[in-house]
Amino acid sequence: MTREKLSPYIKFVVSLGEFAPSVAVGTVIPFYFLFFMINVAHIDPGLAGTVLLVARLWDAINDPLVGNLSDKTRSVWGRRRPYMLLGAVPTGILFTLLWIVPPWGDLDRTLYYLIVYILFDTAFTVVTAPYSALTPELTLDADERTSLITWRMAVSIITGLAAALGMEAVLNLMPSLQVGFAVVGVVIGVVGIFPYLWIVAVVRERPEFQQEDGVSLLEGLRVVLTNRPFWLALATDALAWISVSLVAETFAFFLVCWGGMLAEDSPMMMGVILASAAAFLPLVIWLSNRLEKKWAYVICTATWMVVHVALWFVPRFTMIPIYVVAVIAGLGVSSAHVLPGAMSIDVLESVELESGRRQEGIFAGVSAFFRKLGFSVVGFAVGWVLKLTGYVADTADQTAGALTGLRVMITWVPLVLLCLAIWAAVAFPITRAVHARMVAELEARRATSSN
Image (cartoon, rainbow, N blue to C red; front, side, top):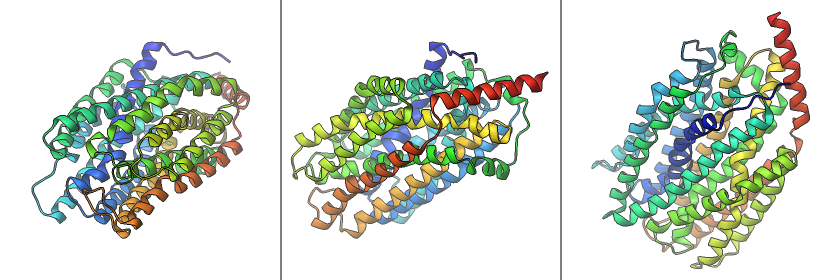
């Protein structure tokens, strides 16, 4: 089997596409959008959680649709790049609008955030579903794919760290949180446009994959959803990221209400976690090269679980232990960025062996559907837990019920989810040797077909 090497330049350009998923959707929205709606825009916590539920449900549904559409697209630009070109500018504009507080009544503001979030998620999916499908197409070599994923996740972690530090500076410099969040929205929205334009300009897609006929959405769903390795890879990935999402949605509340930190200083803690994740990235890669990816993931996730247990025992208004826990959490966060994705894309060859077709778009779309379905439930649940336990907006003085609810959501619930993720990883059947055999068999099939 011929190793398909990608140049460092191509890896760098492709990895820049992680800026918007990391900064906008992976960092700023999960850490601060619910907090922003409740404490800055003064939306009822239950309604704010409902906004996240409805918008993210639509976001989950549209991923398979866009993924399947890109699978069937045939153009001189390829199957994926036309969508990135189409959606880049609207994505930036709509992200900016998310952080504006319109001078309207409560219900009108709630509808505003719901509509803008739905439009933003639609544009974002038009860009990122084809972007995700592009990665496994660029090389069929398992180790080179891991290398490309590592480049992407390095950019994801570093830009997320920069966003955390930049947000703290902006929020402290601006006259109010409302103005600060508006400035953050403009900067991230504008900067997030350019990486996709660069990818469209320099990356070329594999012409042989365009020669295949596309399949219907239902047939694509059937092929992917009947593949056992897909479900195990999906569970490994989705459960880890749902845990991250749950912590992200509650962390700002936890820092302010339990730790006693000022809201404008809370991005610093997010920065500590991401800085630690960046520092641990070489260890994660070393483990994945030394061991099978799934065993590296199990080791890293086990340390992450200890972090959640430790958070339960942190005394109130004591920040130093939280900083220590945040540093240790970096190993688990780093592994969540790299290893589930590296495991998941190896499933594509299993799908092709069973169906005879490449299914990158529908695979990426279905994977995103289940992950985002989990995200939507998380946002809804956090909002309503805050409401039902008596959370009071814009103050650190909370009821015992609200404090207990926050602590449970940031400790024991993620612990259970990560236990399930480890179980799925252990059961994942595609090792490095198994994947090499699948690629060799597919290459033999293509050679026979071309002859």
